[in-house]
Length: 430
Image 1 (tube, rainbow, N blue to C red):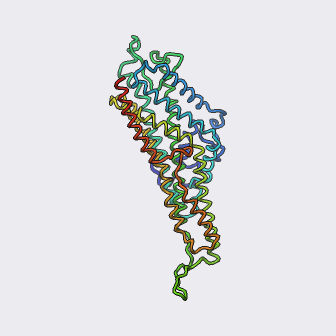
Image 2 (spheres, helix red, strand yellow):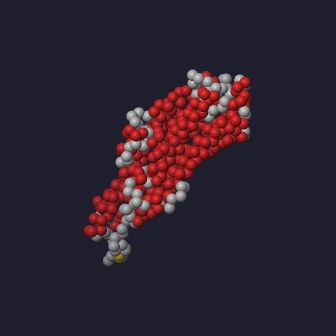
């Protein structure tokens, strides 16, 4: 099925890049040159081999021409009408920041390590439980990729078709012949030709807006989906790590025996068991280090991107609410779906990153409950080291400043509503 996978699509899959949801995500990321094919063992396409990024150039031009349009029309166009351009300019800023992210070395490292180490496909044969978690995360990831990209196309279509419908319903194509109507667009720019009253210019901008809207949607939805997949698989790794900690073998004769003085004595691991436990502890520490190191690389790759993204939601959220507040069918059709998608992106990404923080206490308890009292001194030292490391929070922070999670999400939503009320008052008076 398109949305739901039962795991049967993994049959005969030999590489991570051949999994269906990875192929779907890869096809979108390639459009914005965000798929480092040669670093993840994938076959580069002709588009991958193109030097430079023409889509990035177009995004920068969009951002600059949008700013010029704002500069030229502030005070000339009502705030409600100009709000659309504020939104598109802010979205272009986020889009440009995410396309620049691709050129960071840390982004390449994240993609490489995800495909070769972190993706649970690489650990599915470690144990029966690892296979179980791999299948679970696969089902979640498959649904998530398909669902988000389905919503992306709904929002993309509504955003671009609404102005066309408004032009048709208002008979703007006929009225413009008499010079008393302007043609509506999804995105406005400061351009050297007339595209609001002349049909040739209108067709050029209308067609171009479809393409640039697709690019912007990919930068929002596909990149968010990619980050979410990284967190899903890290969550799976933590589940496996905690399970392995909780099922560390106990001493074969683990019973409390009374000595001559009536005191109790704890059974110790024998020599063979001590060696086995030592090897298991080393594997567990390596696994924990893999998780923490990958989170650190993620922080370097996505830190400033998420910081800009949170700022975008803070500003754009209240503007979108303001545009929808008129309750006119045309405004709700264009901005209603976009508002739902934008707020959903904030909520879902925050809750997904919250998964990492929620595992900290579980991991700490699993390490603390290890039978350290039955171990030799060298193994106790390893347990002590892991206990100290497990107490460090796994919560993700953008540039080590702002925590990405439910608390920040609630703060942004509250602030957006507060600013919306203030802007509504200001716009009404204006």
